[in-house]
Image (tube, rainbow, N blue to C red; front, side):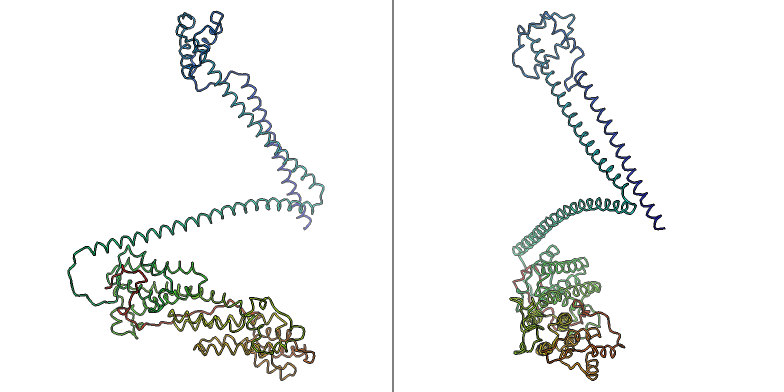
Amino acid sequence: EIGLEKAAMDMTVFLKLQKRVRELEQERKKLQVQLEKREQQDSKKVQAEPPQTDIDLDPNADLAYNSLKEPNINARSSWPNSEKHVDQEDAIEAYHGVCQTNSKTEDWGYLNEDGELGLAYQGLKQVARLLEAQLQAQSLEHEEEVEHLKAQLEALKEEMDKQQQTFCQTLLLSPEAQVEFGVQQEISRLTNENLDLKELVEKLEKNERKLKKQLKIYMKKAQDLEAAQALAQSERKRHELNRQVTVQRKEKDFQGMLEYHKEDEALLIRNLVTDLKPQMLSGTVPCLPAYILYMCIRHADYTNDDLKVHSLLTSTINGIKKVLKKHNDDFEMTSFWLSNTCRLLHCLKQYSGDEGFMTQNTAKQNEHCLKNFDLTEYRQVLSDLSIQIYQQLIKIAEGVLQPMIVSAMLENESIQGLSGVKPTGYRKRSSSMADGDNSYCLEAIIRQMNAFHTVMCDQGLDPEIILQVFKQLFYMINAVTLNNLLLRKDVCSWSTGMQLRYNISQLEEWLRGRNLHQSGAVQTMEPLIQAAQLLQLKKKTQEDAEAICSLCTSLSTQQIVKILNLYTPLNEFEERVTVAFIRTIQAQLQERNDPQQLLLDAKHMFPVLFPFNPSSLTMDSIHIPACLNLEFLNEV
């Protein structure tokens, strides 16, 4: 059966090549016939009369021309105007005049009284020149076309010769070689096509990038223009308002609402969201933008303007997304908008009118609830946006900490004197992370986490969210450190176990000092804690094996066995872990249903929760600083 399949494939390749040769031969014959026809047409045109030009020749033109050649007027030098330089149009007009006369009956002397025959002669020469120029142009065009056809024919002949040569070579090969040769030919063709397509894709991508760049520039210009127009219009309104004569009246109490004109919305979002710098609001109420936005929403609800509510919330969400995309590696900016997005979400719940969210409200706060609209759907959108911002915050923090972890946790000597008890043969080894500027100590990690914690607290991020941030970061420290331990023989030693236990205790102390010990961060470090203990335990007797199995509950069997295999004695007096001891461990742990994965997933992220956290502030107590440039907002 295999032989029949190969024979069928050979015959298929043979028939395809044979068909291609026939097609090329037919195409060559057609081009040869076209070339011969073209050459015949060119030779006929050269022998035939000149083609008709744009100049309208009279039917009597030949008669006049022949008459000019008769002996009685052959002395052209005696004609007036015969040698005189005249305008081309005048000469041709005179030539037409002569053609319209009846040359058989007219008196030539009378006809030539005003030198018309000389003008006609000049006209005839102009006509001859035009005809000659047109004939040369057509002849040149035909020659170029013939050359093009010849080039096509030559190219086709070359391709046919190659195909013929390939065909002959194929017939000389064995059936298996024929199939392989055919496959190679097809691969070569597809490779060339692929290169052409790649080149086309690169051109298109380059053009796309260029167009996107232009679009961004135009969009920025349009937004700037829109904001400038809105600002100018707002200024005009204020100016007109100041010029009007107003009647003094007693000011009403501020009810915690902010009014703005619809055309000022773009300016509001620009000043309060897209162009806002967190440093501008230092020393003010945390999450101030969220409170201002809620007061604007509340006024739109108060006036029952559903379009205004929808437009403001949509513009706010899009503005926050734009800021986050622009500052996707800025921890402070990301933390700032996580705080404000969560606070706006809490405000929409606290003042929704839902009794479940009003249990901690004061009577004054209950007066600030929404009256007309249910914004539950927008609460869900804000919740989803908060999750995205949280994930971006974690990604930024992990990106800052990750380069420090291996050096600080495994390589740097935080306990003085331990360098003298490193495993034999590994004392002088240094990894790339410990060289030059890439060497970090544990204090560097702690300083960085202090900075993260200070930023989040100052910006008013909910304490429950801060706890989850550090639980996630401690998990990442645990995973990166343990994975390196499982892959490096030089750090699987008693001294490394001692160093790890000290570093972990320092991190635990930092959590307690920041009141973060309830976050669950220590629990995420349990695998690393047990690995450090495993490196320090005795590894000889049956009792040692039982102690290891009862202690290392957060490590998988595979991880325990890997560490024991990598364990390196401090010196020649310490025995290596025996194979028999490792088999004893495996036998005792065989009932465990451990995952087969050796390394931890350093990118794993715990689900984030945003517990409802109402504010004790009342809206009428909030002051808007002048640095926000929101003078167009009117307190109501």
